Length: 404
Image (cartoon, rainbow, N blue to C red; front, side):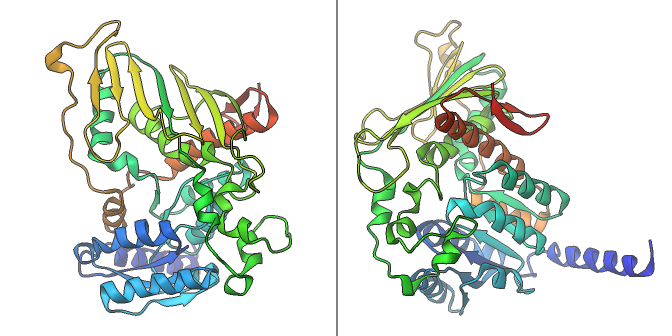
């Protein structure tokens, strides 16, 4: 190693050392994406632990002017400090005083923004889904893995105590052989309708920046405000809502990737509403030892459930808001005895606190980049099956999605 490389290595070591000194070192965080999720979940979630973990909020970034102003106001009211407002996320990443970023932008921007954040030396918390495209996904995952940055995926359901307890219970054989997992997640109307009803004039945002890597088209307010329902920016419920479910499947069972997938879906209720995402979808994914079924239908709020089926009983995880999951042994091939038909409690930190602690310990968080890879492969596989009308296969050795 020559002198220049030696000095660079020493500087990196010193920088890394400063990050883990302890509670007297303040971690400075920037927020990229100041919509509902960015403010009410990420920003306020981190603020809950700001004194405990000694964090400060240095900058907020959003192309939508009112959103950035609201985030800055929340920081001002909660902390008494001023956060710098910027429109271009790369300007925020160039700020050497910022240690970590929270990314809560539209789905189609996640991979590239996370890649850029890690390359800029920032730790990151990134909302789900991580990827909509295999090429962007693999570039992002490989960039994170080559770095020493701490990255947490925004799949917070895996960190609640009931999820952690279910993981211990099922991987310990408590449910016997798990052979099928299902979620039915319905709603009266598509969630993107409420977002699309928000008013926005072109002068209050940056339309080109919103489009990001997508093909340019003339200003369209509803594509910006209701991006959840436009397939250029978010494929639909199977690539957005399903992420929490499929991540929970991976977390609890320990399974890495699905092998094969078939999907059917379309728009049957909310026709001619100006959106391109399907209002109903049914997808089945095959793993090494079990089947997974996910279904969403907009037009009814009835029929919601999430269950793990095993030879010793069925675990009901429908209420994942923090209440313990329950076991039903009725109809089981080899039912659990009554005294064993309960899941022992497990304690765990909230997802955001877990990430903040890991910024100092430099340990991997509960939902590291591999979790983002796994959930993204599942939703990309599901969507490709829908679009092509064919069974799709994931080749984990070559990291490709193909027909098969």
